[in-house]
Image (cartoon, rainbow, N blue to C red; front, side):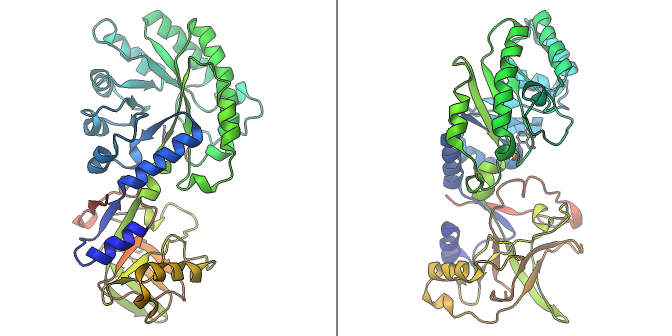
Length: 410
Ligand SMILES: Cc1ncc(COP(=O)(O)O)c(C=O)c1O
């Protein structure tokens, strides 16, 4: 956030809004921190953020490879040096052909996809594939596995057995398997999953009749995975129980990108309806669907940091949700210190709801408490932790409103 603060101090007037600001060095720092915590390869799942500029600049840090879920995503990274992993249960022949042509590793979801690979045997070099295992297999190999929410991805154990037999009969080279227990699942199930993974590996190698080379244990890291209690040292020790001929990997989207991105929108007008104060912004749900939290049963709207146009300074700290008052003063003081002494002279304070420009009642993107300075027209609100899915999981055509600009800040 310090970089964003100084960027606003220097260029607040020129920044086109609504926009995303992405920090390459934050991506690099997140990648470094997570790979050293895990001690394995780390694959970046590009569905979290597929901004081409950011990927190009960050790609040399992402040395564990990229997980790609569509031809569109593949086209963005096909020319790069990163190892590519194709993973989508709906991947059709066209996508599989493109995957083979781009020398990507295919993560096979089902037997039909496996059969579709037959046409490439002997014609094109096929990289050894991975089988995607449904999480339902975990309990079979570790009865203490806590289990995860059921989903439609990958194969159950009976299908895995058939797939291995088919790999042998069709002479499709098998590298290993891939697991994914769902977003945010890591701290809860990683240890039990690794224990199951060791047993699964033994059984798959036995059925295949040859050693495998690669196991992806999945991920499910949260935006700020460092803040969750998890014993990474014990986990790394457990991973040493995998045989040494196996390359281990994890994968992440939000764990890498969330904290590296910010969303900024300008206040166009402020208004009051009876006792409620609103800031109407030039961007909202149309550029940042997740910020409005319409998919959440309980919305915990984020509080933005404010760059004050009138005083050319930063007036409040972001990151906390507005429903929590805890630490609000200290956070605010911190931002004032960063912004310089003049920033302590705050004007009107009071609660405010930040709304977007889509005419939808649900286009509410932020909230602040009574103790925060009220925004004015021209101020820029900056929302932290908007680097993952905020841009990529947004549908923009409604009202033909403009898309958000992107700034790569370092
Ligand atoms: C197979 C797979 N891997 C990785 C991810 C990335 O998840 P996250 O961004 O929560 O790390 C997803 C997300 O849907 C996924 O389906």
